[in-house]
Image (cartoon, rainbow, N blue to C red):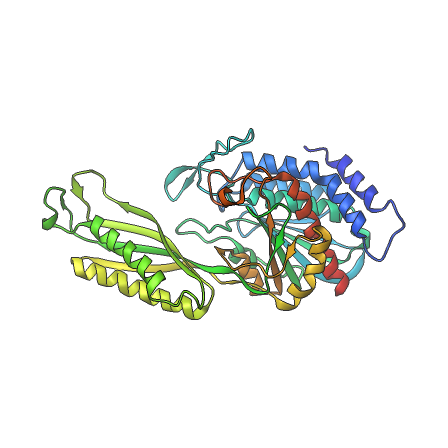
Length: 432
């Protein structure tokens, strides 16, 4: 599809053009990453043009499985519903290291104007929605396929086994479903073979080629908030005869903002409470009986998380009581804090420096975004790294963030991403 045989041969030739060393050299990895870069770009554009929502990544999974099999990987499909696991056993004995990429897109209408922009739609929670790779997961898959190509060309010199985890539904499954890292783990993604450490990479709007991370807590924990209110329907001209759901919604939102800003110590630990969905009513002159609101909670400690859950539930119930309605807040689909193992974080900096000399920050700010990579990190030592992908002509202050309909990246940084993944995997196996 993308000139597989010729590219693999080229990568292999670059990797073994010199006499075999104890491990592939920095120059060999750099040359191999450069050689596979056109394929990485092609994969990214193909996946970007054909995005799929969580647990629906059928086309993406088929592409991944096909490419991995052609590279000589042992491949397991339908892991965690649509996930793919690729296993490459090196020519020398050793430990097992895993690299992870997420595959799912978002219900976002693309507005980038790219020639390969998405025009796809899909069904999400009962509605037909536009679909876009607005979080960069298309680039994650493409870079990990590039990494697979580089590693396949160096197989005989790899000391141990590399496991590639192509994961669905990182953004969370739709209501009533399970998915993501939780199901990958349940289906044995870390057990066959037993993984000793896992690394992940996420692209964002930071400076191009910058690699950022921090030890211990890095990305926030995340909960889905679902607020339901049952009131009394009435004519829009007679709000006193029922319960005004618009007023209830407004008071709940004000309460959430006040809790986040005024009822917790914002200096001790960051936290965010956001309401992003409000559903009520069918007609302009009918005050409805039902209100549903959805949002997200982000925290960096268990104590703060539990405190905010209690405060939100109490506030929502109290507002309902005040209006004579029944209101409830439920928290679900929790992701824990993404925790970077301190020991791995210490030595991995040298590996990242080989990928992007002078562009590594090992004390990056906390990120209020959340990641279900955190579930892998609860099982085995892990490090999660951010890759900056902002185009040179886009000012930092106005760069579209992940989840924006305008989100795009500089494709040149894929080379850095591939090198980072290869060096993290190879260096871990060498150290062990």
